[in-house]
Image (cartoon, rainbow, N blue to C red; front, top):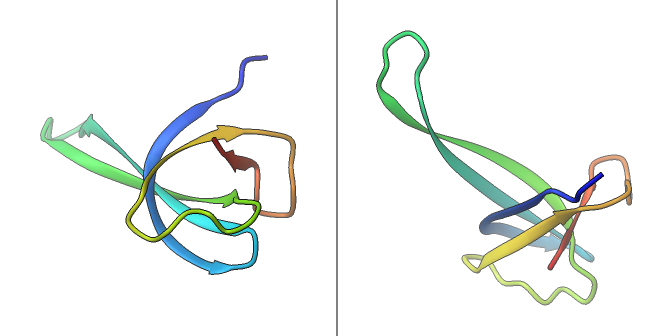
Length: 74
């Protein structure tokens, strides 16, 4: 199984060793056929709190670290 790698922007770093990353993708609406931007937020493990809000980062899927965290910072 290959690891999923996503790119996004840090939107929160207030937790210890955890950041929240918003990943956006551009897709066509199935009914109206207009292109829309969809956004999903992931909790990401960031050992040492290195990332700051607004940084562009890459994240990689990993084994579950906690109830919500399934990604780590690359």
